[in-house]
Length: 115
Image (tube, rainbow, N blue to C red; front, side, top):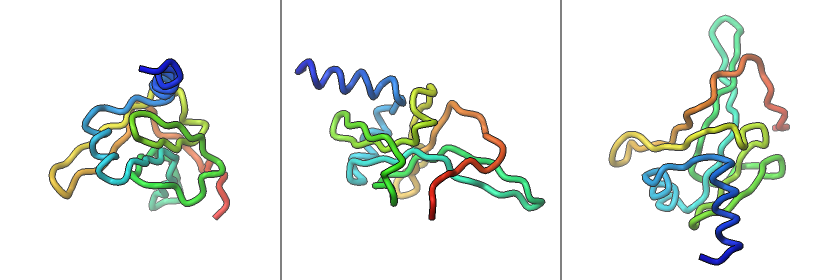
């Protein structure tokens, strides 16, 4: 492997771990994954941000960090990089989806993106 390619691979491994089945799934969906916080609101006024991984390009990538490894482009919110997160895939056939493990729920609304 070329030394520069090895540095990119090592750099991304420290940003987030992606299991081999998730890599295949992301490649099947176009080769791009976005990892971001998504606000969830409760019925009584509470809210929490959960980490989501979505196959595809982000709507607004200017606030995200971009990495490339093994034919996959990763867009990730800076606050989620290097947090020992893991992307996996679950489900079967057409019901497969990506998931993120490793970070607890965060109370309050911290999404600073303008819509």
